[in-house]
Length: 180
Image (tube, rainbow, N blue to C red; front, side):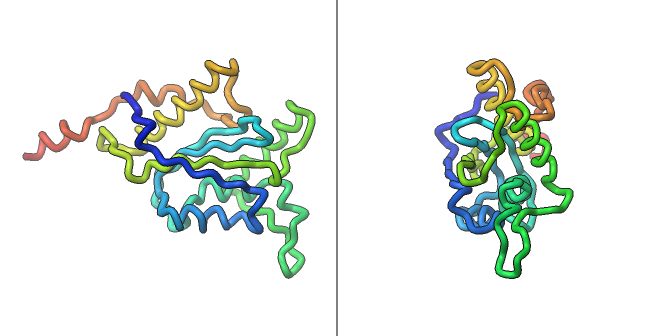
């Protein structure tokens, strides 16, 4: 399945400029992004590729939850003196990513130098009846391309979804042809 990357709009979020992690959701809502891929970089180091194609009530929830768990939000306090760092279980896998990053690179991640790139596929012309599977293939393609260039997966891609390209897919035209 060929991906037409020219039909995918990219947006960049400089996390260091945000006052609260929830501003990620505000930006995603502003651009009406519901289906997306994303990459997270720290000082130019690729940390992770990810994706979401759910219909959560919160725009960009996957990114917001992960980035909101970053340890560097811990010292940022709101007007009540509470930490801005998220504590729930959703997205808490980011804490492991940060621990692994620090062990591997020898220094911690600070949100000041973190950049998230959003690949907006909300209106992408999907070829199958299952956009989630196609977005999963797009994510696998980004990771595989990175591996070809660098020789290993980004440290934050803990789970291997490389078999996404081999999963069966029903083309939209085939599906429509069954119900004439």
